[in-house]
Length: 304
Image (cartoon, rainbow, N blue to C red; front, side):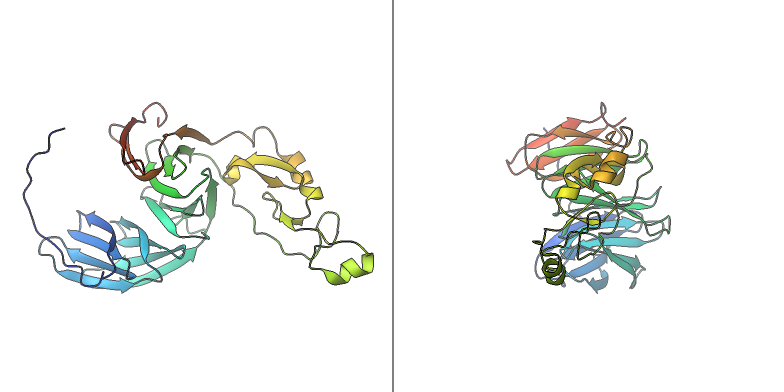
């Protein structure tokens, strides 16, 4: 590999980011440089003269950043699991909205400006697809990693999402399918199938002279059920569950073979990935791992 000499252009003094810069993003169309720091600050500079144009304090230190040129929206993911959308102007910004669906920190963000969909990956092993442009408030969960998600990229021409994780997995998701939202988990003091009391329901245990059971939830209907009434497992790919999850017995019988058809393919990178970059023109994927190895992948056989 030959490294050619390049011209030094300039530098930016991050007066706000005392805790260290976590993410940097160059917006060529606006001549802006966006940056975030461990001190919970988000700043943007003019790339021509290095002048700081504005700053915003986030709820937690930021670990993911994306920008939409058309709307001038900055998508900021932080360590509390929250995603914040900011509207940037030349010298000020305004809060658009915040939303939270992860139980741990956001590790990666990916924005599709065509479908106007935001993808967020997290240390909780999950990916969430947020329908920003549809204005329906829908969020679809994708479960295909056994460890934290470290990188996301989107191939708009094939409508496929590529995710990489600490588990070494490279997952190719088919997003050109009609997905279903996962249900809210319901609260109950007894099994909603057999009505046996759960272990904290002392009154019903005393009245019925029965030992309380542990509570579980069916991933398809969201009902609170006991272990006996949810003894089966199934994949539900259209809900994002590519691995087998707990479902109640009645839902297990209603899931068809067509509904169990996978919507993702899984590939082993053979190293724990900490960073990835996708080049859509050639279909090349670059990954770096904790083993200090950089790998270049030809993704054209699977992203097509």
